[in-house]
Image (cartoon, rainbow, N blue to C red; front, top):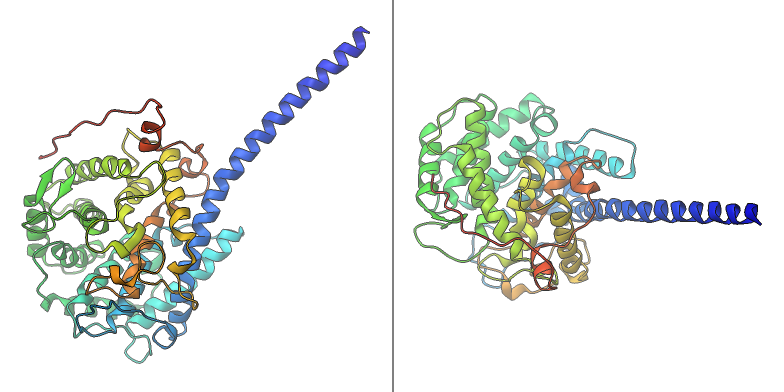
Length: 414
């Protein structure tokens, strides 16, 4: 009798351990599934652009949709926009070392396509030679290309042949004649000069100084910049202002070049913005459809993704919380099959196909700025951003009656 009881106790203990291991395994699988989902979304978005461009067939095959209120600028800006914005978003992922995992094989293929696409973009004899003149818009997307080199220099810049490198330097310098608009565009000029700083090329220090001082003058407080002299409620703090400002100043400080605003201050402001943008994610994993450029979709969260990848998140939030929030938004947004056309290219819209939301400057190439949410894929799969248990984000806790952190105004003027 005593033997049977002991035997049943041992069996019960084994069952408990087994159940615990299964539960933990299931939890780990869910976390792995998050990364796999991100990778598959990024590959789906990127492959039609880079596969075709690597063969010099992007202009031939890309189905480009233009805003119903298109302002008549050269339509070839679409290809520069698609490549520049996409490559800035996937650069950290391409910077990871090769491996034999399914993800690693996808990444290796994408890296090969990207390097050939870079070369084709500046080769005047290639069908996919990008539009480098004839439209001020090219300054914007040249800056995103420069940003991609800053984000992954050893993987994306250094492997290029000398002729291609010289062509980029020449094309970038030719854009100095463009007068930037008096708003976030100052950062596009500055980003290209910061790239020159990063490769020890001659740079225009006045452009860097003016951009940094002017953006600083437009700081409103509590993590928000105005995009020019007048504030507008939109997501340009995420699309451009915070990420480019922080990365430009970081390059300067790394090269021991004076900056009128310190990196630490710019980063603290961005982290405060990240605290607020995270709280704008609703309990249902949506975010307000406000302001211009709504069709840029999840590019609104670039600053949060940049911190997750490169600088660490604010102390008020966890990796599991941010990963879960962004993954849930991504699934809610991209479950709608009308985000893409039948050829696999993004269509105008916020969630699905909504062309009337497009601004006068928006085309299908513009939409690839949504790839900037994928920056955390530059972290290895064993990083805590990917391995931490999923947690609920702030508004979901708040609206379900759970304890959550109270928010406070933060003065970050200097």
